[in-house]
Structures are given as C-alpha cells and as structure tokens.
Length: 212
Image (cartoon, rainbow, N blue to C red; front, side, top):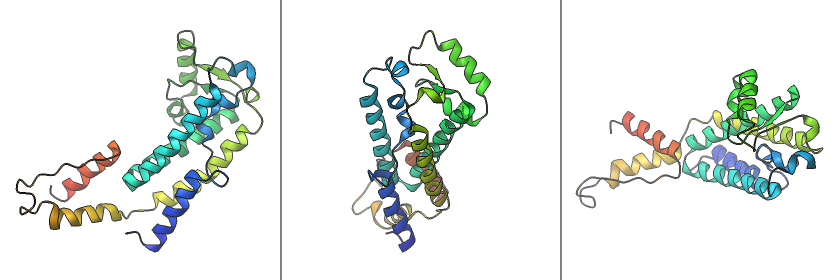
C-alpha cells in the first residue's frame, strides 16, 4: 500500500515513463537514428534499432519500478547521468558513438582524453565506433535530449528523496507472520524470485539487517 504522496508520485512517474506526448522520448538511446545520412549509412536499420532500444529502456524502467524502488532509483539515476553525459559531449563539440564502450563512465569521470585514445585504438577493429560533431545530427536531437534531461532531473531528484519501501515492509510482515509458518512450510525454506539483480542484492542486505 502506498501513502497518498507516494501513490501520486508513482502515477506521475508511470505517466512520464510511457506517455507519447508528455513523457520521455529516450533520445539518449536513439542517437544513430538522428545522424545525418553520411554518418547514418554505416548503421543497418538505424531507425528500427533505435526505436527498439528506446522501447527496451522504457520497458526496463517500468519493470524496475515494480521490482523494487531501490532498483528503479538506481536505473533512473544512471539514465539521468547518461543523458547528461551526451549533452556534455554536444557542448564539447565531440560526440562519440561507441556501442561497445561505456562512454558515459569516461565522460562523467572527465576522462575524455583517455576515451578519445581508446576509441582511436579500437576504431579500425570496431566498425560501430564513430566520432561525430553536433553538426552530424539532425536538428531537434539536442533539444530532445535536453527535454528528456529536464524531466529526468526532476523525477530523479524526487525519487532519491524517497526512503520508505512499502513493498519491503509487506514482505517482512508476511515473512514474520506466515511464509515460514511450519504448519504450511515444514522445512521453513523460501525461494524468492526477482525481476532485477539489484533487487536481489537489496533483499540480501535487508534480510541480513533483520538477522536472517
């Protein structure tokens, strides 16, 4: 059960994750779709692949929020950081398309020179790598990124302030009152399935704090 404020935040979040007009457009994961033809031609089915990746990210976030608030907050924070990193690349005038490298990590840690060298070293062997400038992208892409980022910053800020976890509270309540009851569970063993590895790790820690 969610309190009134948390219930409202949950509903607003689901709206922003999925609404076609008001919500996120997941531009961070659609960069190759918005490349101009000269750069875009090297990527097969760029539009389809970008749309599919954006849909995967949307589905992931929706699944994460129902897996655990902990997993959702971690994913939302990473998405916010990754979007900011791409905007920072536009501001610097050099945009890296490198699907097999964690570009965001280099940018956030201000290791751009190291990233550039890494990309130059791998460029011949990895045809998916491309070094672009803002002029290589269609008009509107940067604006879309910035709009997504504005939504993400506000949403992330609100979620990072949430400390309560009603789902975990309910789980502990049932764990203590019925799930290990020897009348229905003689061996007192339980298997817990989770949508997310982060939720699993979160549960392990929370259970340990309960002395289990």
